Structure formats: C-alpha cells, structure tokens
Length: 110
Length: 115
Image (cartoon, rainbow over all chains, first blue to last red; front, top):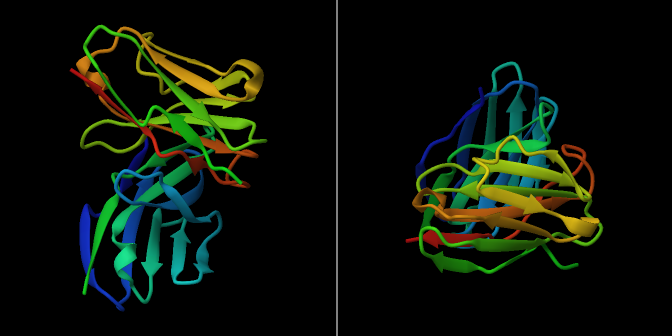
C-alpha cells in the first residue's frame, strides 16, 4: 500500500526558518514532490526530488533520502504570505499518479 | 501561458442528481489527471488520460463516475447519480510528459456539495 505522513500543523515566526518533514512508504517509488496550496486555490508546484540530496530553489529547498523514505521542505526567511498548506506527494511508476499526504498547514506569525 | 482551468468552481446538487465537471488543461499537455479531496482526507488520484485514452482509472470509486476526454483536449467528469459521500473538491492536473521528468500542474478545483 501507499502511506505518506506529514505533520498536520506547524507555526513559525516571520523571518525564521521552518522544516516540514514527510515520510513515505510506497511501492515503485520514483520521486517526491512538494506543492503549496493556499485556501481555495490550486496546489502550486514547489519542487521535486528524484535522487538523494538537496534541491535548492531560492527560499525553498527540498531534501530526499530514498533509503530512509524521508523528505523535508525547508523554507527560509519566512514571509507572512508563506502561510499555506504544504503537500508532500510521492510519484510511483506503478501508475502515473501522485500519492499525497494530508498536508501540513503552516501558520507564519509576526 | 494560461494554467489549468476548471468549471464550475462550486456546485451544489441534491442526492440523486447528475453533475458534470469540466477541466481544460494547459495547451499542449497530453497528460490529464483527475484527483479529489473529500472532507478531512488527503488528495486522491482518480484517473489519468494520455490524449484521449484512459491510461489508468484505478482510482475511480465506482461506476457512478464517468470521465471522458474526446479529442484529447478538455475533459469532463460526470457523477450520476450523485451520493452524499461524493462531496469534496475535485482537482484536475495536466503535464506535458510523464513525471517525474515533468510536473503536474493543478487547477483550482471544483467544490462539489451533495445535499
């Protein structure tokens, strides 16, 4: 079966750094995606990892360890607009689909 | 470049009625996906089109759901007859090539409420 776990909620302070963890157990794993979703809007692609290691994109970085079934999204220099849900999703070649975690609701406070 | 669009944004219907949701993918994207999120649950895969062909419909919950993509452009998802448990947000996504070489881009979703 497929199982993706991430924390339900996190709170952080404007200007700080926050790390959102995601663990997964999926068959035929072939990559890990991170999306950002503001309430009532489309999930927006942030990054993906296929190989182990860190991918950096400006204030956002994502890390993957395939052997540990673990990923994290790192957000630096937090801004109020970063308050949103962050979705971890595994892509597996058993089907061309994404399997999503429940999402982590991040609240950024002044 | 226009993103993935979905229509309607909201739909409220009564149990037993029929509803048709529409998705227009990004122009040129051969891959089109339907997902849904029911209350309190994670987003779940429904099916995948490559052009007009159904590549994978393993996530379709039952035969009350019918998806089509005639001509390989826009897609419709019909629910007939709708049941209470069908309430949720239905997302459409499209991609140019098969991920992870490419990325799935999502539409804003259609919020379906069945009363």
